[in-house]
Length: 469
Image (tube, rainbow, N blue to C red; front, top):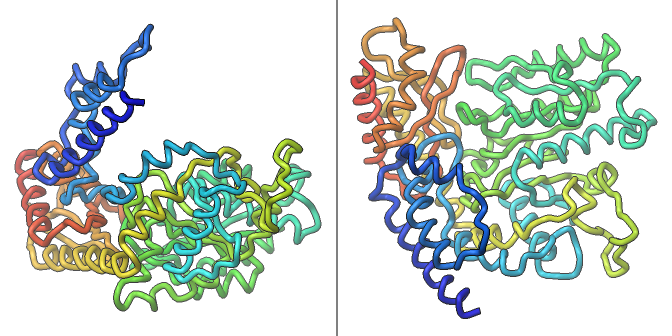
């Protein structure tokens, strides 16, 4: 164990030095050809190597080429810097290396607390057992939609787990045009079929059009289909738009649909000053997916599925082989009964550490800081003649585009700009399409980002545009 102790001290130093140097380094740099070959083309060593040698390789070949999301001027996708508390305890979770499928040990018990905390922060009703941690919101969505599918089948007098979907009326679900791709993937994986995912139009603020939703559901009922679920967004990835949750909940109740909310990125935005009215109706959802590894900065990967009725998820997933019967389990059973994973990692420790380190006040402060930055960038964009704001700012995402030199070719220019900005190394922004136009989007998740970083971002876009010209 002496080798481990010595290497652990060195590893801790590497971690601290890396995190301390992030802000002074380029946000991102391309991996050179020789390094790319080393990273992707290694052969398995014939004999084992020492722990110190491994750390030398990490120092030389891995740490110099990060994704960039630890930097305060990383505004791409929805990837946060890591929580120091989460980084600190990750090796301890690995040292225990439990399976948190269930059992009487620290992992599952701590997960109960963490899930309850997340439900409390978002204002989602949480009965005991009504949630579990997942690899991310994609898996949380699969759990929620599989639960919705099973409940619809049981209401109709059959069992989707036992009978399958063959020969049954096609089940349809409803997602806005701004809904996340994980909703479509989940529907495909669950055998519903891509054609049964109805894309509901959005309004001028990129929110689901509730009148269109109601009409589409009624039309499908008349056609003999089986509408079973509507999936709304509490913060889309393109613009941060929050669907009219309360009105969508009314449509779900009217037609007997499962009401799912994708809050992977944006659910915690409810904590921002004055934001609560935009989230009205969230508490009416049957299920909510969210990602602690997004806004909270819990090290990847940690998602969460929250369910109003824990028994519904258990009905969709519980399968306990004889070798896993636990006479000591309480009435809630094991976490493995509420989702597809059997062996489950100790995700709760890094999530507990992150939330404990921040406290509720720290979470609220982070959400307010980042949403304020998004609004400030919107103001800078609207004040600049060479930029255009494309969507209202409702969370911590600003969607905009560069428009210098007239309107011709703006789509092509804005499509090329993210990579050009990234190559310069001083800021990192990504692109999307919004309302049929190519756009830039900046997502704010770091508590270290400042107003000065916003000006750097706009200047870097301008310089990158000149480079392209």
